[in-house]
Length: 69
Image (cartoon, rainbow, N blue to C red; front, top):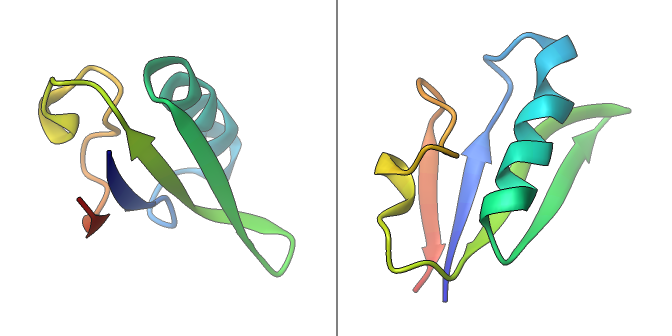
């Protein structure tokens, strides 16, 4: 299972939870990264055979780093 860190800091703060909800619905499991009481990133555990970055759940324009494969 691949794990990705998606940086949400460039997204409007009011839309970040909505993105987390969408990612949760499409992925195996997510972990929210909270910094100083603010949602800054999400760790996505991706178990789908579909490529994460081209999936409908991927928040376009957000930096994404593969953590583990």
